[in-house]
Length: 606
Image (cartoon, rainbow, N blue to C red; front, side, top):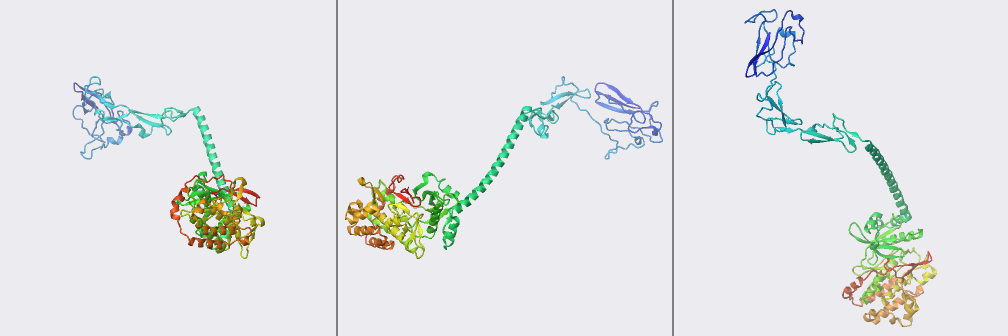
């Protein structure tokens, strides 16, 4: 028999006891501790100390005895879930501490505070903790409140547990940690607690409809984007084909043939893209227009390297006019003369072909002669110098270029002046190459009324002397300050060339000369220039001098006179600070025999 004796501090008592008998070990059952070789009883509650006693039933004192299997009996307090009876324990019970050699089994102790209840206790549990009655029915204990962990007996010993760290919510909900608890929030359009062990999140019927609608819209949107990408690719392909078409339509292959047949021309001319020129001119803004002419519109542009250029956008042309455009490129690509505007490149991948020239800053000779508001017109000396430079440029085209080139549209609006007021001949859209062994060319008449060679207009036979006639008109403009076709009062519109020649023959030319020339030009030198202009304007081309003869005569005059350009320069700059040229002027009319009609040619064109 085994019994437990204990005390609660006030009185002693004998607690539970059990007894077991042992007859034949073969009759015992492993795992059964029910009075056959083994017995067990519960520990009485309220004990603060205890002792265990073992005795033989019916005997007193010595319990030693001799059995066939084991002379020893054992009694111990242990966790009720730890010991599992085995018959072999009756023969050899050897659960020992390796350090002390004593038998050792696990014991569960129930610790409490004092012997009072929660209501009677002087000690109170800390915040975030609760007081609980001991399981042993004596005293009390403190435990952290739900959602807190730590030591409830210390100040602020119980700390909030972050339940969200272990993801108690389903994946579609949002976990929010709260003091002592947590909250799972379902997404918009759902309801429920959002917890894994709860109802989770359930979609609302109305929101499902919205989801289906949004899904449908997104699907349509992606489909639309896909269609747009396909259309973009097709458009890009179409644009590339269109660029190739324009390249061919604008004479690209012809230009390549022409340039490849002339050594060094390909490297000298840059092929610009349409995008480059569009950016350079701010999408061909009206504010960038420098002037308009019979062959196209000229825009001011700034290239990516900050170089300022003049970009000539030709008119929409037919097949014959494309040849003129290519002609201008070919001609300018082989010209390198200080008095001829320099071609930098071209663009052929747009419907309208485009040329890129050096930018000449001081507008046109037409502007300086005829613009209203100029208080100090160009001096006599500078007019002779400019005339000589134009003559030198034409001499180069007629004599030095190979093959020779006839400009076919010499006029004051096509003579540009740079920063140093040096003349530069421009606009070669109507120019013609003269084949070897040819002195004249049969061609459709093209040019500007007032400057057009009458014999060329009558016969359609173009020669170098046609440029001589046009130069004679420009020289007459320099001498008289009048336009090629001007309003003559009661007589209506007057042709300057005819009026000039008549005035020279009738010795009335002094009446039509510019006032400044009359005061600054020597009469003897004036007579030489007047005679030279009259010879250039003769109706019969064989009576006209060549441009080489004209250039030599003008250079001879320049050697015999001083150059007061510096003194006049500051005054002439004032002439530049006037309002832009009146583009509605009807004094210059261009005639194109291909369309048999007169075209408006604006003063700023080049």
